[in-house]
Length: 186
Ligand code: ADP
Ligand code: 5GP
Image (cartoon, rainbow, N blue to C red; front, side, top):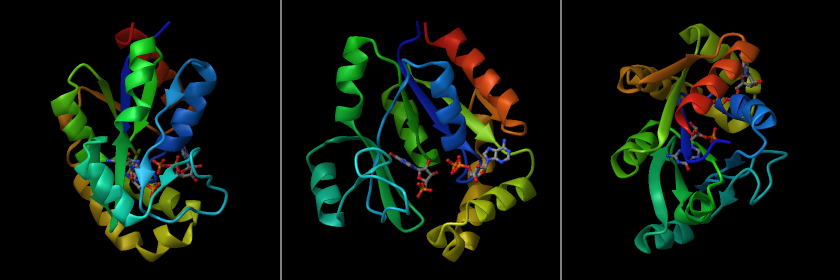
């Protein structure tokens, strides 16, 4: 059995969501923290499953009320982890995974140093671009240059992380993630 908080970070399009989905098939007790965001749902995304989609004013109110463990602006939108996604699970010993960008991961590192943090890196910058384009949602394509610039900055920060997993072959990366997790979250 594993328990505790796992933070998976890395540039948009590197495969964090895909890796976590695969990891959760191998570690069924691992629950996903559903983030809040002010961006619009993509086709197929569901409120309360993929994100809590909130209007800006409600996001602000929740920030002011101290409801977030961490929050950040990304590509002109806001994203954050609600305390309510973690507290009860941690108390019950249920392991929980956060999929968040770099600024949020840094905040969690400062406030929850006991959380395991893993940075996901692409095999190359070109591979990252191909994956981002390949995912093909309009908002990503519209802001592609901005997302790629942010990705460059995020990649430059990978040395801050004790654990870096290169997502080249998906299966290898999932196996490595599980190995690190089972080693650290006992
Ligand atoms: P993120 O959550 O980091 O933004 P996604 O999980 O949405 O990234 O993955 C971005 C795209 O890359 C998706 O189309 C996904 O299918 C693809 N992808 C993920 N992992 C790999 C991999 N190891 N090799 C090739 N493509 C991948
Ligand atoms: P997307 O719009 O592609 O779903 O997500 C954009 C970026 O926001 C991704 O890098 C994703 O990991 C990050 N993100 C998603 N949820 C959160 C969150 O709760 N907090 C922070 N800081 N980043 C998040």
